[in-house]
Length: 241
Image 1: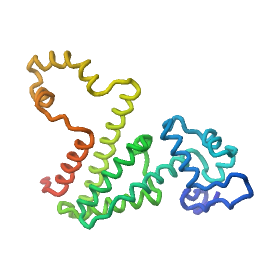
Image 2 (image 1 turned 90 degrees about the vertical axis):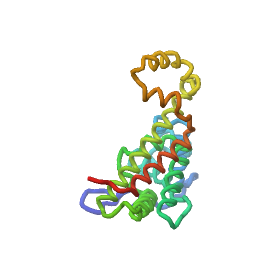
Image 3 (image 1 turned 30 degrees about the vertical axis):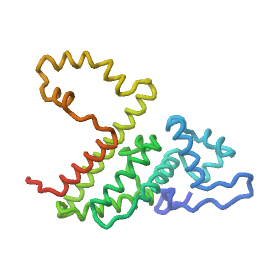
Image 4 (image 1 turned 120 degrees about the horizontal axis):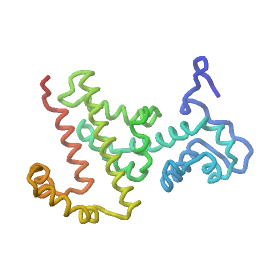
């Protein structure tokens, strides 16, 4: 493995592809990542292993280690392949339109690859496509009216990322739960409705009662969009110390 500084290995994105060999099955990091993504889409990250991936590719497991040093590098390649799709979001001149496009594209892709949310926030994503998405997001936020310096920008990026990770994890967790239990929202509400009604009738939770009884039942996409717009509006507004 190439070593750039002392004993520290080069990141997988900076190491050259292994030289092609005379083998029945040609390999590349892109092909390995795409196959791993298909497995994870069908079986989750817990169903992904180097041995299973090698079998799907029709090669021996040891051959994969010419391309990735370990499972962590494999996950890095998969994550950056997903970011490559996020980077395809439509380009806009305005900062707000840019952020809306990038964030909605992120949700769209995450719903297609649910395992992606399991790796959000776990560690920095530093692949070239992840950096491109990060640059687009940070550059757009830096042009927002309420962002006046680097500290404002750091807080704005942090707030947006916190919303994105939390919202996506919640939505996908609900989808997984519905699939694993066979219970959708209406079933859950029917099962717990009598209990919740008794609790709200005590009068101890008037604000919760308003939310339950009078609140609009928005779908996931609409809720995601409205919360995103609220956060962006907050970033542009005045924040007193």
